[in-house]
Amino acid sequence: MKLAPTSEPVPLAIDRDGVARVGGTRVTLDILVAAFREGATAEEIAQQYPTLRLADVYSVIGYYLRHRGEVEEYLRERGRRSDLTRRENEGRFDPEGVRDRLAARRFR
Image (cartoon, rainbow, N blue to C red; front, side, top):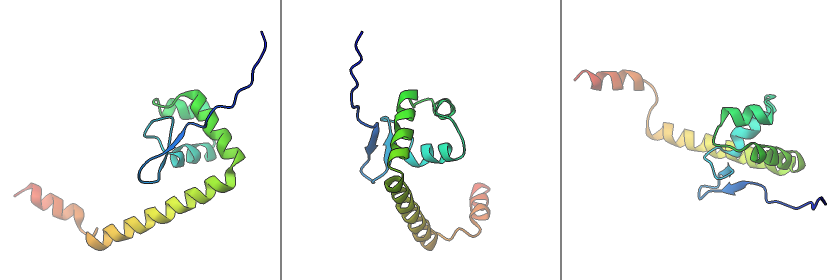
């Protein structure tokens, strides 16, 4: 049998909100990279997120290792957007006393 190396696309898709998702699932690149950085193996990540295929996890980890600069910049930008969204939401909806307000509604 003769091997025929092929170039397969990285199983990442950017959704309409600009979020990179892995292998057609809802699992984000952020989650996969965070797990890998924390020392999880590809097998452990696939086990933790059963919608992921092991081959896709390996492929995305390989992409991350080959394109670390771009992925890190993407993750920093996602963090900035997340912080901005949180601040906007907290400005519109005061988080102080939320639990008490919800509990008060429950007992009306």
